[in-house]
Length: 192
Length: 385
Image (cartoon, rainbow over all chains, first blue to last red; front, side, top):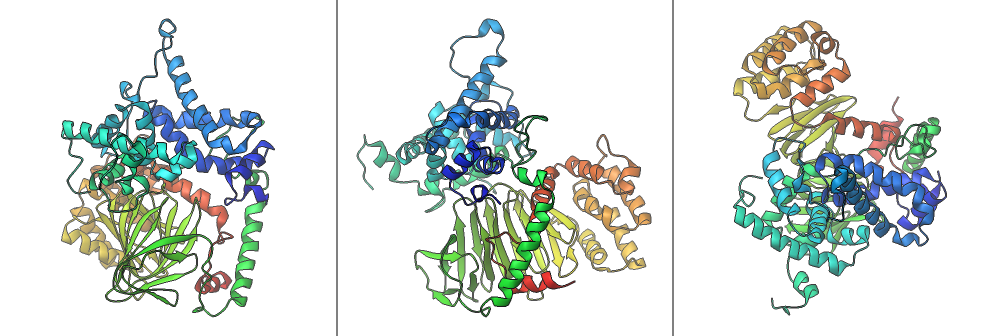
């Protein structure tokens, strides 16, 4: 077994190995970063489109890995590809006469969410509340509340500093509580 | 606690440790959001490359595709190594070295033991390392946590060993007692070995109990759990429970709000080791008492009944839960796997592809993973014909 494709290898070692064509190493990177990419996409496009786009992001990243000179920048680089892929998806989804530099529509404007189980309506309402937040907050909150990543993990995976992630989580959560409070949605009580 | 109003770092760090890294006092609203929003979480699935692409790789373990004999060879090597390690291993009660990956241990009550060391109440910084056993007595309770996984509460009179922890696989062994698991890791990553079944988390919260005779019970509160032994599978969704027996494996799951007559009859049927008149009568009661929601139970009974019983079982099941497109009577009676899977998904209790993916991704690792702790008991099983 190639030691670089060891699941315990560092990201840097895996990126170097993947740059040299080691598909096993790239597979491990995929398993480590798929949640982050999924979360970034979910904060920008409809849930129904996210899974396909996750695959797209990694398939776009693989042939471009050679261009990444500092392997330690892989997390931020991959996050940027994911954000760009979401923007590109929106541009291509628009009719030609609407193509412009409008900011990306948040996902609640799409007939987005078809959750996996019948607890759906409440889950959808919670997701839509997050998607109404400013982009910075909604991405970080989705990584935390949907993808289950911790703050330190979000920082390590996205390349953001701990301080930025803390602030985004804190302020985002504060705004989310206000929205949920206004909607008086049944998110605070009941049997879990 | 005071803070400078215009210092965002300080502002953010003053509270909400739970929001930051799941530590501190859990915030009920955040926990509720986590549970709801897990619906939208990334599901583990292989990275698929386009056919004919130079980057062709059907799944992350691409090397296995090109060299299909590698998993078997690796598994054989690992088993041999494991057996050798077992032969050379120190006595079972020797302490496991406290190095490498570990989970955090909170002592909730009383005095517990990690290895041969006692951990007093309120002692901070305790860890459970791979290979170590945590034991609670009649008055102690503990909590295990791992950032990427979730939290596991251990009730009194329990024995739990940490077998494995890496980014993709977390594995405990519950020899005795009760644990309550609240898991936020992706489905399929957290597995608990018990003497009579393997419990696989599929995104959920559940309680697992093991009795001194090795039998077990699982109750799911959120999501669903897969119970597995020797090719016998049971899926237990929220609100349902399932028992398991040594050497036999998981019984038939049922919703806890089913009628007493239904549950008693199911118990009789499950415990009949041979087809018999009593078992057949019990099945008749199960069918008569079943509600549409009990399709859960009827689906599991399909492969566990004789051909004659299966025919009447299908008739009742189809009346309660209409078969989805692509499912035929003949297919179900012949236990066509694809049709059984389609029918399961029609119950809307969880997507069975999650389970199939777990099975697929686990199969090549028939032996223990290289960094997995192998208790002696397991080594003996490996050597058996």
